[in-house]
Length: 277
Length: 264
Ligand SMILES: Nc1ncnc2c1ncn2[C@@H]1O[C@H](COP(=O)(O)OP(=O)(O)OP(=O)(O)O)[C@@H](O)[C@H]1O
Ligand SMILES: [Mg+2]
Image (cartoon, rainbow over all chains, first blue to last red; front, side, top):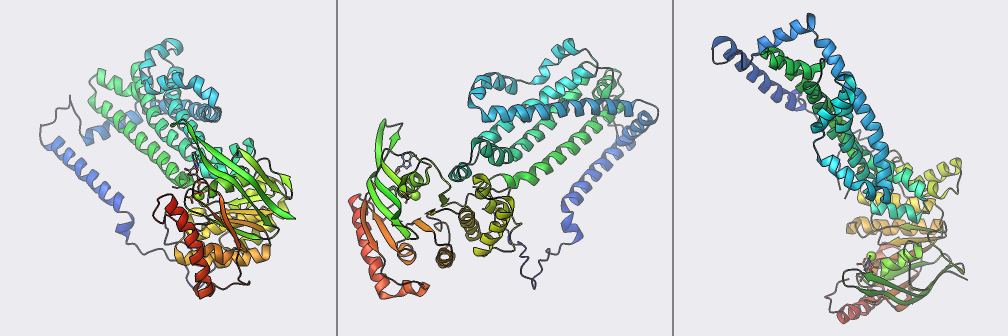
């Protein structure tokens, strides 16, 4: 069991709890060290790029060239439109996956029979790389936005579904026994134990879903699209615009970091909901 | 009339892997009077938890009867509440929310009554000021008090407690024993209290059931001859230690019969 020594005791007035003093450095240690390292690497990269000819602009790029390409595609090019297109595909696909994944996961977790019937199909689909279905999905939906929405949906749906079902099923046995002792009905157990208890699991599914959903949208656009960040990368590659390719790559990396860190934070916040022991 | 009667209770567990059953409780009979504090001691594995879960209506049994006010029990009921060994609190509910939980499930009290009872029992177990804390922010002893408040707030006729203080350190345990006696004096419930510790049983109870080793049978039932209110210093008195010693011997015989080395 966690012991929290800094526990506030509101009824003791004399000892108002004080947050232990930290220097500015201690508080932001991770950001300072990590940020400095990134800056140094970028600086070295830039120096090598501008003062030597070790880097061929065909095979690689440099920070200043990427920044320039970023600026010109932002002002003159399609960057914003591409970003909006990818963002829309991801948001719709992920939203659909979240809603249907949680609803179906709850049903599968709660009803044993339904789970037993669906398990072989779900396991097969969960284990298979869904991105391999992209050509088929393009046949179904065309190269417009809906094939991308669908691949994001398909990618994110399974982790959310599987984790939600696991959360419902892994109900704490001690809590279940206590509820039964107070004459709880099945519906009460579902409402007061199964659903709140599965929140941390659902958030684990969300985190995994965000990661695979991002891969889905990018690869989907690379394989068949005329718009979007994925298309931008693929097009940059085909036309040997290495700088543009890097711009797309950096944007994808940032989106990944941003979205997963939000999901991770949510997950951590609710992890105290997991019954301990 | 007796509040709780346990009448020729027999319980077998089926061992799937060995394809045979084990006898956990064999013909256990005793009764508890209204308002009485009954402690149950016995060597490990003698079926104390099984018996308590049967009385709580959580476990089916093979033969015999469990009667409350002369009526046979079927499953869990609002006339009983259980304090388990592990606090089993909902980690996502505050202390107040946890104390309410039993009442919410049983739907016997309206909102106003639930609020009032929640406050009252939180105060009774000495946790005023912690209503909005979460279980993970409390010590083990405090969590166990929440557990007790939850059970009491549901207003049971019979309070069932399965080694509720087993996980606590010696000091907290003594403190909780004294608190429990105070609370019991106020709440006047019929209590069945299971424990491994003989001195805990003697200190708390009106009567003590001593159970034999596997299969569990009633070996002895005796009345504790000490007046109430009892102080913790009673545990240091010679007459207390003598009684404790004689119960020890009873249980030791049992452990030896099974070839265990003082497993109590
Ligand atoms: N679910 C089960 N399946 C099979 N056998 C069980 C099961 N639960 C308990 N038993 C057996 O029944 C006997 C009684 O168990 P029980 O938990 O009631 O004992 P106890 O007196 O509470 O022990 P302790 O003091 O160690 O808590 C034990 O010998 C145990 O092996
Ligand atoms: Mg036990």
